[in-house]
Length: 124
Image (cartoon, rainbow, N blue to C red; front, side, top):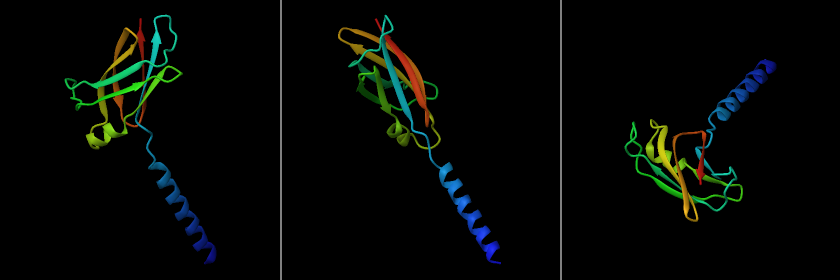
């Protein structure tokens, strides 16, 4: 009887641990690499993401600005954006602008929830 209770206890504990570990969600991140025309990563570039309100499905208004770090990429935490959307919406479309000094480049990305989304923008 004691062995059966102990086995049931172990089984219950393992089940709880499996359920709890499966609830962890991956972060929603948008990473923008900025490169020069000679393919060098550009630090201290201004990166702006602007939601495409005319996309299908439409993306709600959203704008954020970040500077690239010394490794040449800008990191956007998109958790707040997806928290405002609700549980059904898992995709957003964004125009990406990068500017350093007097040169700028642009791109377009579909950003998905719980994924690290990556785009590279070339500035001439």
